[in-house]
Amino acid sequence: MIRQSLAATLAAALAASAASAAEPATDAEIARGKYLVGIMDCSACHTPGTFLGKPDFSRYLGGSDVGFAIPGLGYFWGANLTPDEVTGLGTWSQAEIVTALRTGERPDGRVLAPAMPWMSYAALTDEDAYAVAAFLKSLPPLRNDAEVAPVGWNETPSAPYQPVVFPEVAAAP
Ligand code: HEC
Image 1 (tube, rainbow, N blue to C red):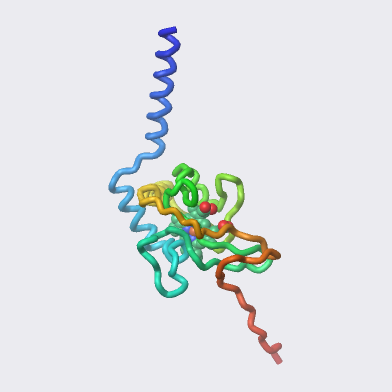
Image 2 (cartoon, rainbow, N blue to C red):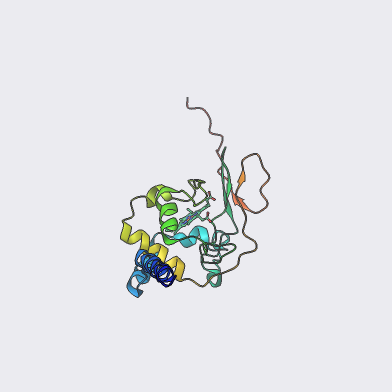
């Protein structure tokens, strides 16, 4: 009995140390992530107001209010990247954030629309990708009840979006 509970305690301690070893977040790592998130311009598509000319930095990375229409695919809004448990990435591990960033794959298996430039971010090194994830996890969690879920191309979008418009160009002579 004693032996069993000792084993359980040991197993729990080992699991806890494995989890923290997998997700260390030093101040230097968070600072690197902040720098990368700045130059990779996550805020353009993930902070409300940006596409209306007035980014609301009090809701930094809290989710965009203007989405993208991708012909044939659907309508997509830059999601809440803060660690809010309900509308943000609160329940995602750093590894899941890194996978989404580099392969476009969310924890539920859906592949993110190409409006999210994960194909460019595929080149991130482990170190940089985890620094981005660590920085996102360090943000204050923001609840975004106005967050809009993506809808298919044949559905009716319920929030503003930027359309891709093909101009009618006269046929070349
Ligand atoms: C050009 C616009 C754009 C930029 C720049 C951009 N994103 Fe996105 N991102 C999107 C869109 C749009 C979605 C939603 C796509 C979908 O639902 O299929 C998204 C989705 C995501 C998701 C999935 C969230 C979820 O709940 O499904 C993560 C994580 C993410 N982006 C992280 C980032 C990070 C980190 C950066 C900067 C390094 C970044 N994005 C830069 C447009 C962008």
